[in-house]
Image 1 (cartoon, rainbow, N blue to C red):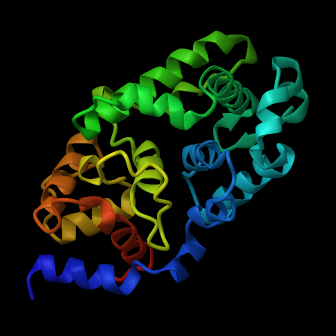
Image 2: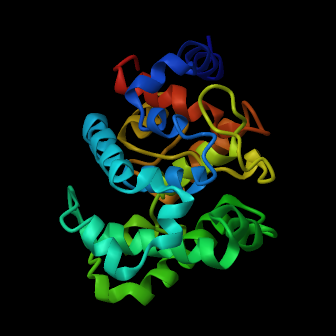
Length: 258
């Protein structure tokens, strides 16, 4: 059996909803019918680093204190109120200021465009590659965050690494995978107007290790070049939806099956 067959076998075995129990996406699925599901998904993805139980605890804490990031929450949000809602949020090296800036940026986008979706449609209408998508998106949100420097978000920019900086952009890549890929019990399928073939695989330690085992990459450490190389090799298996293998490869890595 060749590597492509083994990868397809892992997909059949692990690309199933029961494995969402060890993924932050399980929380996002609860809100799939919410009008602010893009905002919920983005906040959840950006804080998805570290151990899964702690990630889920952090996401659920944010949602509990923000009326589940409802439209009303964003409509009423001000710099003064956001400080009072999240005065002491801490998740690893991110603190309240980083979260407060992110929420104010999303509130501004909703006031200006009606939703994050409408901004992304305008911003990415002519994007021709994953690199363009991630670069435009991260630069836009970082730029908007500068308005709120007084909220003291010292690690805000770290939430939005970009391809031009060499980062694999794991959390942003994961967010776009969630939003763009079809609703197949794993991903959400909300932004189907973005071509799935443009997506880039979210590379974490699990995906990197499994990709090396299957000779999907020649790189030794996670980087944008590694993410592109892995995605390019997965396109040889499925040119239209190469990132569909991400969930199963990551699950196999987490469970030490490879």
